[in-house]
Image 1 (tube, rainbow, N blue to C red):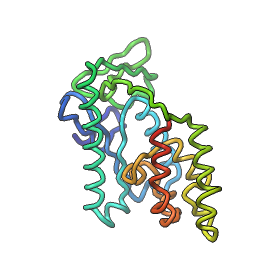
Image 2: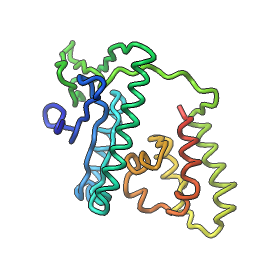
Image 3: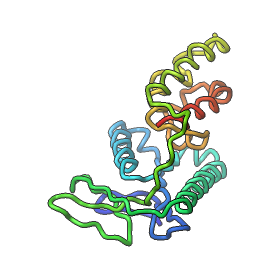
Length: 226
């Protein structure tokens, strides 16, 4: 469903869950040249994405430069991510009956409603149904806190990557500070999620060889991070 939202704030595409047609499985955002040329636009979109993720939305982002370069690859990546999300929700519904999830945000921050349930005003706040009711997963025995994950990634950078690639430019390193901060914040667990969640200006300035050689180890650490 295109242009999901209210007022002057819309998601480009809202994808409904085929197993629960009244719920949305994800939001797809498309960023063009104006995004890359305007710092204020980038900052605004990052804040918007944080709000949406806090409300329970999964965001899949398509960058115009990637689309123009290889649209078939982008369609394949988005399709694979949607299939993963659909399968995860199907497992959740099968294991435990879903219970309604409610998100309450200040009225000025109320940006997306999820039809067919209308938003309701409650003493200056807007109550929005979350895009889908999720059952909390059981904790894994090997879970990492964000600080523990950061420590493991720094260890990988200092004791593995630097040793194996001593001539690599640290300013373009896969685990340089700016990229490390974004990885911990967004926690992509696959190359597809990396392409969709990490801003293009960071990706374009990252050593492709390091991503190829160490990406899976990084994603494995991030997958265990809570």
